[in-house]
Image 1 (cartoon, rainbow, N blue to C red):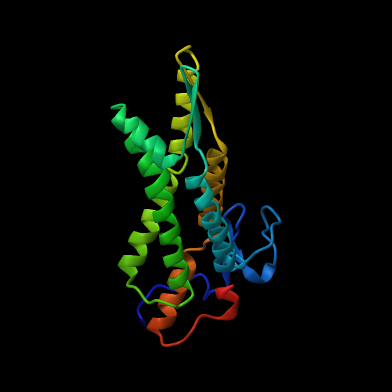
Image 2: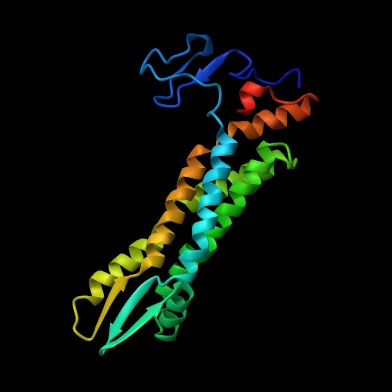
Amino acid sequence: MSDRFPRAVEMGLAGCQTCGKVSPLVLGRCPRCDSKLFMRKPDSVRRTVAFMLAAAALYIPANVLPMMSMVEMGVVTENTIIGGIIYFWQGEAYPIALVILTASIIIPLLKMVALTWLCLAASGKIKPSPGTLSRIYWLTELMGRWSMVDIFVVGILVALVQLGNYMTVSPGPGALAFAGVVVLTMFAAISFDPRLLWDRFDALQIGSSPSKEIDS
């Protein structure tokens, strides 16, 4: 490790969390935007875990409560996410069913599992390889881009179906709970500082543990 590149943390440099300018940490505040300087995001792991627990709590009602209500020929039908997937699949609307399945069930669950795994790695509970860390974090960032796809699908479906008199569709309380899941997982991803992973890895390489300032 003697020929490795020097790290900003070793040189006392910190990137501003607001504007991104790299400045000496001893300044205390960013000379560009006057924001407080931190070597790492404060309480990154604890904030991420808190957001993830809140998202996990909302994930249950998001899948249990009705996602949408449909009135067809005077008959009111309330469907959960799974019920909606089955309904569209039986109606041969396969693309909509697959999109809702992927965006409503698979992506939120995978994102929560991936963020939990990253928090464990940043805390030193598990010791994966750098390649695994990179792939998991890349997957988390990729999934975050598709978090609201199903909400848009439901919104478009409501707008389209309301044009006819045969059937009307309106969002249910499950949609609000799921929107909360999406927002909380987005906050969790933003709160997590991936540099903690490399701090932990470098500490393992040199046989020491990260300092308290970095680990916060």
